[in-house]
Length: 318
Image 1 (cartoon, rainbow, N blue to C red):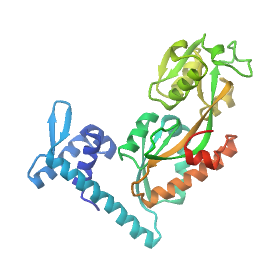
Image 2: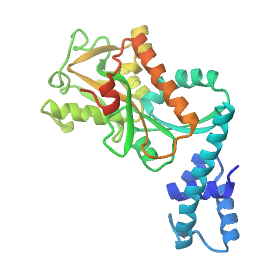
Image 3: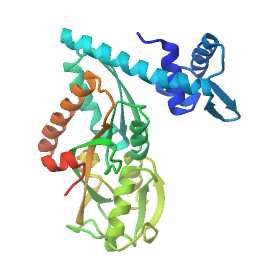
Image 4: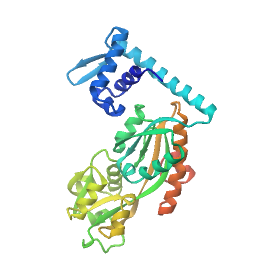
């Protein structure tokens, strides 16, 4: 196993925070600090400069980080190559998912994957789309699953499902009997929005601009951080909202909310995102291949559109 001190130091240097590194590694902060101190004692020099709430790498720290990056990548490749010879798929993966995908798609996907690959350990990081893309960019996770278009051309993006977003309202709302609604129809009512940085918020903001309006034209009553919170607010008659159809199966089955298609519709990609040129652990490849097929099969079952080959490779919807 690669030197634990080096792994811990490498994680702290990537996120530039002992607290965030502890969360990523599922360790206590004192344990992370101890491992870094052990490495500093080994080299007999400081690797970080610590000032108030900020840390930076010293010159020695930059050298150690560059070597650690190469050592840990070579270790992963060695491990993967040996496992390849024996036919084993093992190891640990860190994947990140935006909120909607983490809550409504991943539990069944990961459950099915673990039945087939029992020796692969998976850690999950949950955040909004911006946060997950940032984690991929900074090599903090092996694979990201997000719910908005990804603009970074240095990342590999594969669309796995075409999602539709719809307006939701209480059953007795004046718009509930409509077959379709426009931005003009619902902007006059109180509106529940997702937080800034959310993939849903980004897609909706773009859509509203394309219809000739802006976010400020909506009567925003509140901004909330998860689909469940948004749906509960709508059920409580606080306002209307636009949410993913993926999140609505329970409410539509129980008849607690009305979902109305938008005119024109909002279609958005659910995508897998990863580093383009980084060595890929075999388990990542297996998970990616499994996820693509699983999402395609589930999308068909649930009535979602499956992306074309061009849409998968381009990472966007035509």
